[in-house]
Amino acid sequence: MTTIGLIGCGRIGQRHLAAYTTITGCNVVICDVNGEVAASVSQAFGVPRVKAPTCLFSDPSIDAIDVCTPTATHCQLVVAALEAHKHVFCEKPLCTSLTEVDQIAAAQHGAGRLVMVGYLYRFSYVCGFVRSVLREGVIGTPHFAILRFGGRGSQAAWKHRRSESGGASSEMLVHALDLATWLFDGEIATLRSLWSSLILPRRSIGGAEIIADADDCTLLQGSINGVTVMWQADMVTPAFMQYLDIQGSDGSIFTSVLPDMPTRIYCREARHGMQAGLNLFTFPSSDFVAAELNHFVSLVRGGPVGEIHSVSDSASMLRVLAGLS
Figure 1: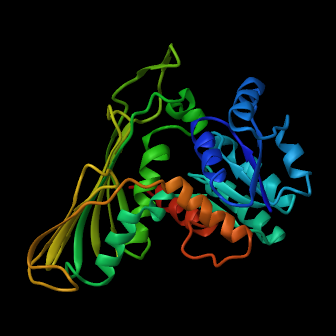
Figure 2 (figure 1 turned 135 degrees about the horizontal axis):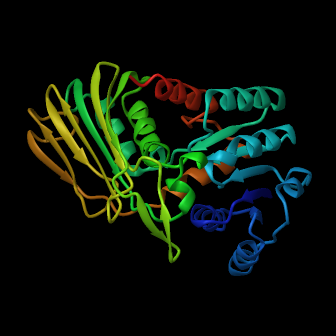
């Protein structure tokens, strides 16, 4: 039996909890700073709750901690969990600064425990398929790509406040940056900001109007292994939007994790089972959260690590973002 201590019962925390309930031999104990929310979620999912994260850290029956709280709280919780010798899953981004990532790295080294950061697109069947197509050279050598990630925003006030590490860069862009490094097998070089703005300074969240001060739309350019990449991320899109547009020497790929957007692969010539010309693929919707948390639980149980987003990966991303020109 594997027992997870889940901290944070908001929207993403409840998605995690739902995923854990599908994993055989997995128990969950929850905790939230808002006691009423914790009580409601506990009753809805039929899981036990505790009053504070320290109760999870000190419980020897807890194998791992899952952190689903606002970004500004991540470092303190992750370090405390590691010092209690628990494995950790932390929602993206891991933390807010290089100083914090150094603290987490030191705590992980001392504890000898796993830290996995929640970049769920690595567990999308569609993204995995595209990665295989690129590795097989179906479109030749990739040289240009556009990654577009648009989110609704207006789900939580903290996501629009700089002081709480909100904004499109923290909430949406990091997904796109991680996905590009995974697809093109390398680190980001020469990253520069082309444009960043706050388009919607007033938001209606939970029936109340808030004033936002974090960016909600950003556009960057960089390169990975010789591929010029453009990233566009925002929290002004009315409905979730995501797509990848990749151009290669012998073809192109256009794809999305959205099931109503077919994957289009154009090949100059037939290769690797693809016909010359346009190849269309449709894939059913899949639960990336369940897939990544299944993988995390397998790691806690001693399974092979695979290609997770690690503490060192987060350190590399933070260094790149800190050096934006």
